[in-house]
Length: 200
Image (cartoon, rainbow, N blue to C red; front, top):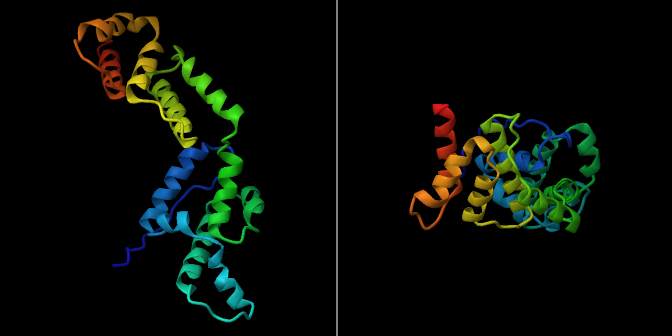
């Protein structure tokens, strides 16, 4: 059964936003449209529609080509003019997608080293509220995951615990020695921190 197509609403990517978050939201919208999985599979064979439009003989992949053309148009509406100009000559939606990832989701060695260093040295900024600090931490984890760098939940929790400011010293001590637990999760640290802040 074909998915019910809803209204497609997405802010334009200008190159200044968080690409990982924008990508996540866009894939969600494409999933609603029934297009997300196709984007990951489309190859250059889907150029058939364009070739047919130019007078080439019809092929069997017309449906996939039509879907690719629709996806290219949707992607185009989600990009600012500056970004669109960089990828508009890509022959398929998949090529457009890969071009965006290549430029804005850097996977180079320096970037991996930088993100790992950021994680290892992460400390909460006492001038920011707890929610903003947690968001910064979770964005860092998401950026690492986008480079296929997996950090266990326990290691994330330990780093988050280590990053807490002096006001949380008693809480850190309790979590380390007073719970009798064998492991620790990010969710537990977040909940306990939020509860402490609420009581403050």
